[in-house]
Image (cartoon, rainbow, N blue to C red; front, side):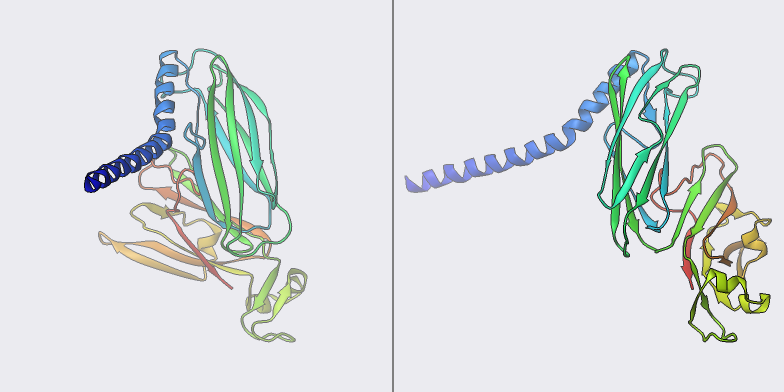
Amino acid sequence: MVIFKKNISKKNYIIICLSIILSAIFITYGRYIYNDIKDLYLASKSFYFNSDKLTTNRAIYQVDNWSAVDPYSISINLNNSKNNLVRSNSDISYVISYICSSNIECSVSSEEGILLTTENTDNFTAVLTPKGSFEDGDEAWIEIKVNSTSPYKKMLSGRFILKVGKIGLSYSIDDENNRPYFDFRITNSLDYYIVKEAIDGYDVGARIDKFTYMNLSNADRYKCTSALITLDFNPSDVILDMTSNAYLNAQSVETINIDGYNYVNKISFKMDSESSDTVRFYKADSSKDYTYPFTNTSSVVNFSYSQ
């Protein structure tokens, strides 16, 4: 009799555990199922409210190369399209709300708007400005929500996490579908140079400010580096613009042979202190969108640097 009760108890215990697990799964995925059903319903009303970065199921992005020096801008696009031919048949009013971590100041370029049927798209920009000092590995974040208020209600949201990876240096890719090229943008916020070869008054490894650097001769400037940038990439996917300053002033260039032709697949070039540079690449497949860090979580061009 005692054994029977124990068996019943174990059985009930298993049932309870399974119920808890199934409940957790339902809570986790129930929201996604509800949002998908709601999207189908709104689509039946010819209502389309979408974004390139925000989603109904809360998109999450992480930037691993934030410099934590300059303000960081995030451009968010909204649209009223199902595809190139089908769009919403009425204007869509919306409001924007946001919160962010305490180690940054955050703002958006507007807090409300109207997505017009005559325009099809609208956009706004979020700006994150660091407060205080950061160290490698530190994080900051902003959470953005956009709610349509008429003719139907729908919420799009996203969380953007900025993680300090290389103090003073950051990069991004500006791209879009069906464009033959993209721009690889690099910002160097470091305000100093490192002496790589001894010059008059400074030993190897000495740090000098940009004003001292500007007063050096051209020969001595060549012996200093603020940041030596290295980009490597697969020419089967992207081809370097050979007219770019990065290529024309490259410290080193590597090539790879593909089908009997030599293609550049790696370059290294110097960047001045507190400067920015843009390197253009042409896409083998123009339908690709290599936008980074948002849209894609990894860069098609590998970035590294040294001093």
